[in-house]
Amino acid sequence: MEKRVVFRHRWLPYALLAPQLAITLVFFIWPAAQALWQSMLVQDAFGLSVRFVWFDNFTYLFSNREYLHSIRVTAIFSLGVALLGLVVALLLAAMADHAIRGAVVYKTLLIWPYAVAPAIAGVLWLFLFNPSVGIVAWWLQGIGIDWNHKISGNQAMLLVIIAAAWKQVSYNFLFFLAGMQAIPKSLIEAAAIDCAGPAKRFFTIIFPLLSPTTFFLIVVNIVYAFFDTFGIIHAVTRGGPAQATNIMVYKVFSDGFIGLNLGSSAAQSAVLMAIVITLTVIQFRFVERRVQYG
Amino acid sequence: MVQNRPFFAVLVHLTLILGVLVVALPIYVTFIASTQDPSDVLKAPIPMTMGDRLVENYAGVLGKGSVNASSGPVAPMMLNSLIMALGIAIGKIAISLLSAFAIVYFRFPGRMLAFWTIFITLMLPVEVRILPTYEVMATLGLLNSYTGLIVPLIASATATFLFRQFFMTVPDELVEAARVDAAGPLRFFWDILLPLSRTNIAALFVILFIYGWNQYLWPLLITTDQSMYTIVMAIQRMVVAADNEPEWHFITAVAILALIPPVVVVVLMQRLFVKGLVETEK
Picture (cartoon, each protein chain N blue to C red):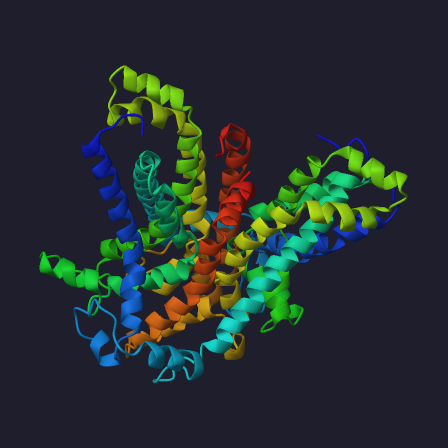
């Protein structure tokens, strides 16, 4: 789609674009190119000389047990966040779609966690699950579960998944609800006349019609779990205990910034870049046009 | 509801109320803890009703900082967060409006190249270029400065696309009328396009304010000076310090202060917020 009528000016459009392009080049494209270049370099232990090594950093990375472990942890974490966030949001949205009275109130009460920063969400849940003072940890102890996420890797993983999903439920809820409200009422009424109860209507009509929304949300949730949850990990577990929650985005930070391993960190950056490009392409090619917005 | 099923209606409301309670639980418990006497927070289980130290605790957090000096006063950090959030929101909107205007209303060599360059920023979050970006910041002397906190984050593909999308729906007749009246492109932009974009700008502002306020990794990378800390990134240091000597009444109050501004914005401007959320994902 193009405009039929346009303005004519020799330099004005360039001047208008200049700020955006300058920032993009200096702070995005140049550092990204640097990361790609550095991913093929190796620095000696004293930082005195660098050597070009082609793809050695990548070969090393994918044969490194720690990195493979980090990939596995990331997979578990993002699937957990997406699954928990989507199921809870779908349930709540299906219910809110039925609630004629109070629907607006419920919506208001459910969407605000979106505004809470991931790191703050992490701190809130950390406080709830704190082994010595947390109220939930205390309840769990009451039913015989010994909670200490500083020792148990599985519990630490569960904690960060809950914190990350809690924040994302509101987002998923909004999109699911909008999707459900866009479904023609006549379809639902026809099913009701044919004696299909609410559960049957949900599984045979509403959920299948929501599939574009669901697919879109799966992609968005995975992007969120991959790239926006750094704050949660950093504030709550710092990748621990024993690397149990060391997701890839956290690892690239700790290897590069704390461990000062340039080549490896840059190679990890390149891997993440490939992932984010793939996810963006999926989002634009397969999702954009088929999603129905409310 | 299509049918009248009283039992089902009760179930619907029960589920929703339960959902609301679970969603609110962390905030409630945190807020309660932030009003307690320090020694009460350290006993499990912590009280479930409000303590009597609401004013004292918050005044201490804002003005004095923590007792064991793991953190300075929080009021300047909130000011930093506010400056950063406003700077990012306003900056992103301004430069995105300009570039969308250039791309939609002009034909010039390199137009598609500019478009794709902007598009690429979508695929390069800070997380994938941490170290080199830090080097650029250090070379340019932008560490520990507001410019450093704001400017590198204001390039925006989403905002540019949103305005481009909107400009496409503005009738061509308006441009023709402007040209008949001998108004130049900038006059058209200022007097016609901007007023028409008001709702879109407002919706985007809500989303971007939250985005800016909630930044974490970026301030963590480029601020080392306590006077430049933002509240969202500073809380992590307090949590680490809390492992040694817990000051949970302090940390919980900071968490509440850090989440109030964006949450208030969302609740008060719900309509704009939902519009912004849906539009930026298109």
